[in-house]
Amino acid sequence: MRNLIMLLVVAMLSSGCLSQDVMKSVEGVLGDLGGTSGGAVTNSEIIQGLKQALEVGITKGASTASKTDGFFKNPQIKIPFPPEVKKVENTLRDLGLNNMVDKVVLSLNRGAEDAAKQAKPIFVSAIKKMTIKDATKILTGGQQNAATEYLKTATTGELRTAFSPVVKKSLSSVNATKFWDDAIGKYNQIPLVKKIDFDLDEFVTDRAIQGLFTMVAKEELKIRKDPLSRTTDLLKRVFKLQD
Image (cartoon, rainbow, N blue to C red; front, side, top):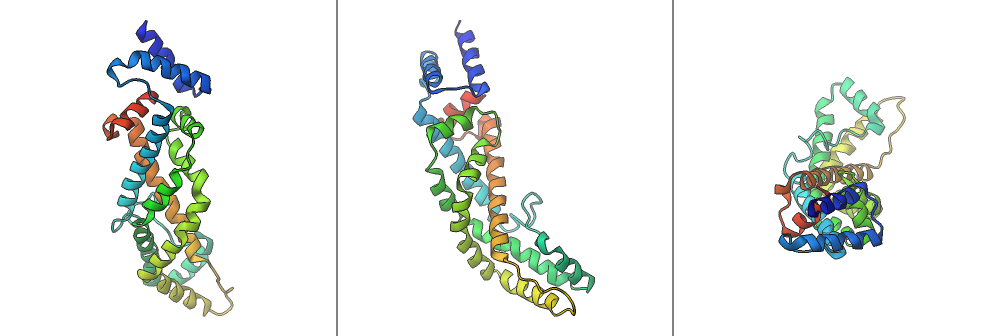
C-alpha cells in the first residue's frame, strides 16, 4: 500500500498537475511516508531548494566561465566576431589582417571571462523574487533546465542593466575596446565601404549573459540527473520529488 501511494505521488509530481490543494495532499502523504526521509517537503523547502540549486549552478557556472579560456575555449559559449558585422571580419581577413581579427575575438572572450567573476552577486540578487508558484512549476514541469529558463525569463532585462557596466569595464581592462576600435577604424578607411557603428558593449553583455545561463543550465541538469551532485540535504530532499 505504501508503495502504491508513493507511485501515485510520483505520478502527480511528474505530470506537473499540482494545484495548491493537491500540493498539500502530496505533502501530507510524504509526511506519512517520511519516517526515514525527514518528513514532508514543505512549500518553503521547495522554493529554498530551487533557489539553492540556482545559486549552486551560478557559483559553479560563473567559476568555470571566469577562468582563463572559460569562454574562449568552450565552443558552447565562445563569443565570436559579431555576426551582425560579419562583412567586417571577412573584409579584414581578405586583406590579410587575420591577427587583428583574432585579437578582437580573443579580447571579447577575455572581457566576458573577467566580467563573469562579478556575475554571482548580480544573479543571486535576481533569484530572490522566485515565488512558490514558480518553484512548483519548475520542479514538476518536466523541463530539465526549467529553473534556468525561469531565471532567464524573469531577470534577463534587469541582469543586462546590472551586468552592462561590468562588461564595459572588463572590455576596457583587457584592451578589447582598443582592438575593436583598431579593427573598425581600419575597415572604415577602406574606400566605398559603408561606415560601421556597432554597440560592442551591448553585444558582449548579451553573449556573456547567454553564456552564463548555459553554464548554469549544465549545473542544473547535473543536480536533476545525478543525486551525487545534490551537495546539501535540502537539495537532496527537494529534488528527490522529481526523481
